[in-house]
Amino acid sequence: MNNSDLNKNLTHYYSNKIETLMDIFGAEEITLENKNIIVDGHSYPVVDDVIILLDPSQYPPAVSRLLNSSLPPKIKPVNFSEDIQFTFGSEWLTYPDIMPEHEDEFALYFDLINIPDLKNMRVCDLGCGIGRWSYFLRDKCRELILLDFSEAIFAARKNLKESENAIFLMGDIQRLPLRSGFTDFLFCLGVLHHLPVNALREVRALKNYASTILVYLYYALDNRPFYFRMLLDIVTPIRKAASKIRSPFFRTGFSTFIAWTVYVPLVYLGKFLKHFHLSRNIPLFEGYDKKTVHRIKQDVYDRFFTRIEQRFTKNQILELEKDFKKVTVSENLPYWHFKCENN
Image 1 (cartoon, one colour):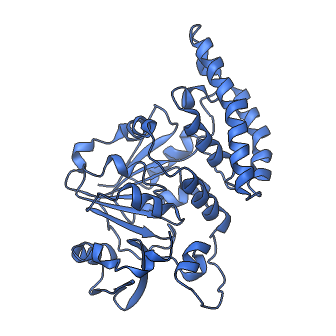
Image 2 (tube, one colour):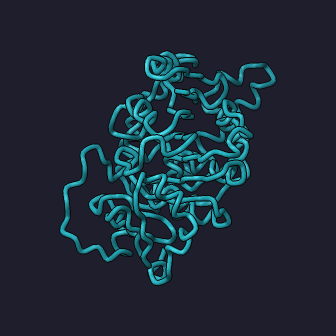
Image 3 (cartoon, helix red, strand yellow):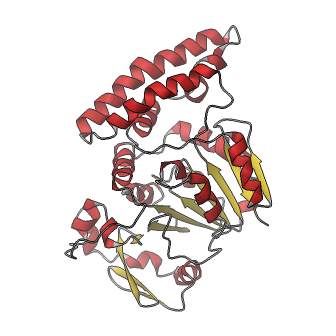
């Protein structure tokens, strides 16, 4: 982003999307201005085709500078973690590209979804990051809504620059000014477990927005040998300490070091033991066997620089059956992604 982003007429991108915006917001009137969208009298800034739904107190520093925000500082809303916003913005601006292995990962996450069924649907990617999953849905659905609360949304806009059916929002998952049932299908992968509130509670809240939801939360290693959990206990304090260091030099160097000294050796050990049908007992092997070192470094960044991390067992996820008509947990990697249905 640079100052030229604000000097061009940005709202023209939405000039043919007024009806869609009115339906998403549940609005009676929407007006496009040069640098804003007015929704029933409330003005939302637009930067590089991204509609900024955040309260000014939640703006990332770069957005505040671009908007020349001179409003007096406000107290940030409860349950808003600025450090999580910073980390994900930094992560995805450091690793902004769609990688070849992302397509294979997309297939794993969406094994519970019949993709052709999405053809005439509006789909929401909640916590979209760089849009790495939406990228593979861009021509598979009627409309796409990409939403993130960090600067990663601008990388998503670039990655989907050819997609005329996409809407880009910078907003807080817990405080969305969107109508109930605004989308047909919603997916939220690897996001809610980083919030400072109970992630399963947030899954329950998402049923207000869509009748079918696909979610991935970190699993509690409940289908793994006991020493996996012991290793997690060792890694957790290291992660919490590392997450406090914001130096880009440290984060890049640390991610590279851990990738080469921990992840890659374990992957090769798993490859060797695969001949003896023992590879599943090697931490990290199944998840990283076919990933490049560059992709592994991005996951190390994600893993070690995020302060908040919640984990859930399969049985805890199945407790959502009290709130949804049907909950389906995939038995495949990544454990435990699941689908909730209310129709």
